[in-house]
Image (cartoon, rainbow, N blue to C red; front, top):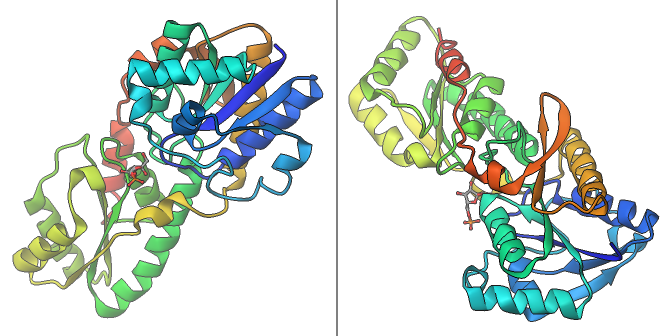
Length: 320
Ligand code: F6P
């Protein structure tokens, strides 16, 4: 392996830069040339490729976002787009490609390998934590810390006005951000797409906790399970208690990566290079029971993410 390429694809996630840094430094130490590909698969198709040195990754470990920039590429979904991408890899002499992104980005890498024989490795980066084969994706820990900070602030104003606060967090199909941040932030109720939810029980709980003298009531809802504004309006109508909606939105994607995200990103990046050097392809890196793993991309993509039901019930049983 003489030359490897790195690209970041899909939604950015805090910690991507730490992974880019680790890949670059570990590869350079092994005498491997590193090419940075800008703007994801779009940039690959357009030849937005440059050689990276040690300095290209200086002072980025603490920065959110991705210095390589990212995109969701429509053209790469077509066989013609992938053919252009494969040509660019050939022109720039890139023998192995490390893709940082979510499962959509991995599917793209898999097609590139199957159709054009390119060696690809995936590193899971998404704040959603919606990739089943790994316990954690890069960016998730930072995102839940951001949401916990939002909950802490909302709790002050919620308690002062004796209101209900509804926070809508990211996660279209996966409620991990809502569930984990809800527990860590001491929310009274967590609503996620994977579990049925009874609105009347929520209203009853709001009324009961108010009678018990509780000043605040925090509801965390994943975007895939409902709109905070709708829930706030329905709560006011049903209980007579004032409710306010907050949507932190893309704030959840930004900011300084947590130490945990930097650590796993560094380990994932280093392992991705090792795996490529061993001659493997179509592998994805992850963490399972605190151990860094690499598994087959096909197998990884076929594993269905499931919610931790015990954690969900715990989250919703802590309100009293
Ligand atoms: O997949 C990451 C994510 O942040 C989701 O939680 C969210 O629904 C989506 O991306 C938003 O995408 P965009 O930044 O393209 O609006």
